[in-house]
Length: 475
Image 1 (tube, rainbow, N blue to C red):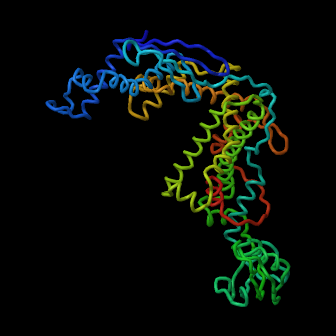
Image 2 (image 1 turned 60 degrees about the vertical axis):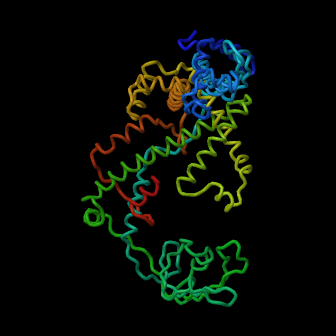
Image 3 (image 1 turned 120 degrees about the horizontal axis):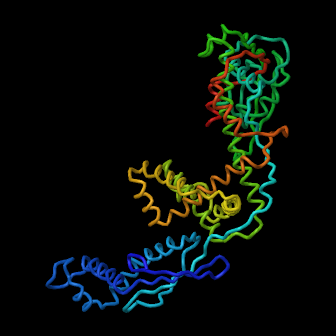
């Protein structure tokens, strides 16, 4: 019996279902009934008594003793149930079916709670997984490309006597119309346009490719608005064609155009940034593809309750995101015409896969002995406690009372299982070469300490600066 006068026993029913039988002794439950009557006294008015000061015996005479017991049941039964879950360390995945066996009218309270628990499965084949991910190591070509992007920002354009091609800048007079009426937003004189950008309509680039100064181009283009069925008409006079001439790649240019004094320093900085970015992309790809592979390995049918919970979690995340940006979810669905039932249907498959991954990681953790020890659990709880400003023991008790201690232990085990997989499955890059993520992480972390060396650069046209490219990619 617990200190609070409750005892519980468990019966395994099969099909991942258990029955908890919980008994709360007469004295303990009578204390709960007294507390219930105190709450009731705050809400009723009895002549001759102040609100909140009505004795229990008077309330029982007025309302009946069953009234207080029913209120105590409503208020306290969930707590008794949670205590039993914690006592038996049960990982339930659905709401329980409760049956009051005794105590509704007098005496000790006894109830049965039948509930579905998370299944324990076995996964075969996880040690032989072959996963392809992007290479986490930047190549010389990657670095050359980034440098050329920066050089392109400082390019000058020179007139050429040849047909226009992608990357050229053409000066044009353009008139766009629809149904014979000129459209000011699509008309301009002496307008500089970069071929290949597709900035207005794909047909513009298609007609400008191969054009030379003096050409007059007349063509139709689809309207960018899908609701518009009538096409656009364009007339373009090509005034001249200019090609980009990149600046010379040398130290004076590096000092003038960047924060670095030499090309070697610039290359070293780019290598370090690319290594960090590519490592992040490789790790994300590895996590994602390992998860997809694990889901494929789970052949057992997963509980519907787990899929439903996962769908609900995804809906709540979506609704929270909409509210964060000041959008009411109901208004959003009304404006987009999206049906909630349709959204639930779209979430069903990814939710089922997420459940399979959860079960697979738990199975691998059990098979490989990766459950966290007490020290690891305590360390994690101490970190959580520091963030909320309580002691580790207080946080431990909070987790135990709320039933979150077992899920926390499981999360740590799943994290260790994923790390084990990263170290033990076969990871290869696009070329089929083996990838050692740990070594790449270490290399990326120490790249900035390596001596700076210059390397040859090839000329490749591009659009954005080095810093812009990094920021865009990291976003």
